[in-house]
Image (cartoon, rainbow, N blue to C red; front, top):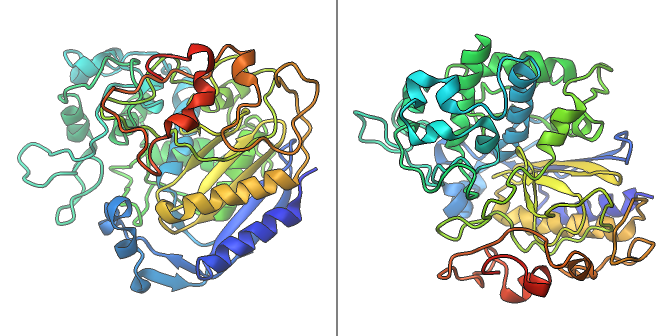
Length: 450
């Protein structure tokens, strides 16, 4: 039983405590049917693209009082930012892979030899690009030849127009890799720019057109586009990794499609095959190290709980799929992704799925959304398959955050591959888990230096 009142109350509290912040939550049951759409608050931050870089270091400046507007609703257009990745993955899977014009494992030097034949990046594949294991560095400040202004490939410079797509990809091909493709997880936004050109080469149509034809139209996403002034994305230079503009209604329809195995409730048709959805909601990182050379990782100690360990889960329970991830603190199949400006989607197979759309920096909203989900899950009763230290029922009440409920012992500690560099400061608040956080994952030896 999903406790809708608990979710609504938690959202109302979050909005009130954040000064009337506007947000819309849409909840789907275990069958992918919508059971709630709840909008609250009226204020939201415009977050103009020209100051996007401030999100990470100066959120207060980005969302100063002058950047807030009134009038939030489920039809308000916002930039999806990092939640664009799952939409982009669906576009590539439908337009290229399912159409038979390319594959997830075709090396770039095979698909685009004129650019990647002699590049170290030529061995990388679309699978590795979308799982952030291509080997490209996480630093997003690129400099185009002949320009003195950095950051041209990932986003337009503040005083220059968008560069053309192909020269940017050619420049990416010259970058020194941080590791061999597939060896290590490094979150790289601009790696996804390669997909925009690859879709164009494979299909003969732009990435935006492919998105509209293969994803937006069958889902009825009438107000979603990679031609997005809020993100700086355009038809001639789309940003697959963070360029989408969307609304709470459209965002929720996409999440519902994932929860229904690729089916569109709006049209009754199929947007993706079940196999393609499984690729998105997966652990594509495999045996890659989840800490990069600088100690960076997205797999934080969130302190979120999830009720059950599903019997179908036999591999790692922390990793990254295609625009989806599962983090420390989650103890079940429970895929999610956050955006720079606070939105989040969740697909918890067999239990529920949810879309949370808002526009305020993630640094502020992330802990609040974690509390909202924890309150909702704690008040709900889920029916699911389980694998809980040999017991025959789901744990009730929820295990405390980061408590593995004996699963580490049941699976000999093989939770995920984690080998952080020796110099990494694991106690940095809000960025890395503490040794105490990691202890349950490292029972009976664990992996690497964990």
